[in-house]
Length: 360
Image (cartoon, rainbow, N blue to C red; front, side):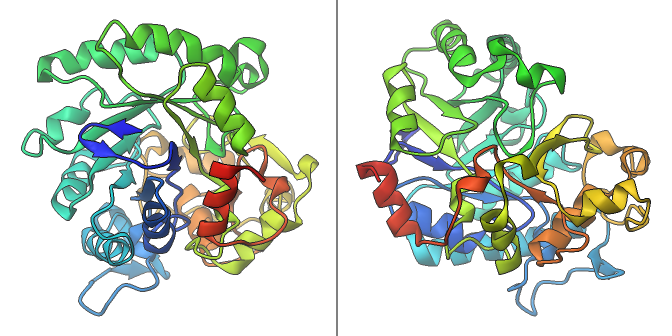
């Protein structure tokens, strides 16, 4: 699979997962094994292995405000440590468009030596604005419809840029969805039904723009299915949580291993879109009104309006994802895709890539 100038041996992108689920160890090892490892830029202020040279200001043990939650210094260390694992293999970064300071973070990724930047959580109509000094960096938007792709491409015309690849994400993915709650269950929203119109729309903007399917991809059969439909590859996130190299705490991985299919549901989020995760003690405490008090410390995403939406739904997404990364079973928010319950044990990234490329 080729994205921009970068050749990726296997047609597999590891989805970026924050806070701290896909940082240096996971992303570095996926790229080393021939996939595209993707570092999440979200919550780098929580990076456990940050050196003494990284100055992160905390308040109540949480990164204070945007500059610390999205720590540039910690991000650079994550990229540097991933490079020690994967060398010169292509390395990606996922930057949510909804993030406060999005433009600065895109520039940080370019300066840190990231090869491919992936953006969803909104329409990244201004993405090329921040990469004009780095023409070799490949830009990949995530869309959930042909209409969204058309809008992005129209806006990118003023930068003389078209996407280097396009990720089409269906409503079975983990975390935030690109659909309203009720639309997540509609037939027309299924990944196999939104991929063909995106493939057709992409043809209007350039020859052979790679289309990558995402959301509910689990095994080689799924990969083969979407490649047969005309995709160049797939993006997978949840299954990589079930690896030894995943950067998250063991408790977070155990939540997935112990989960059952009925435990995984869509929930309300301060971002304003439904999000999929494992129902744990956090949801119980929200019902009982015993959840931690919402105090906006990190100011992570623009749609939350500095904690207004967080107070409306009852939890701060930055704080709860940070707690999950640290293994807090009482207050953590544990995102997963619809197939998360199928994770039954931890394996190495090498073994997982063998399964995905050669079959179970």
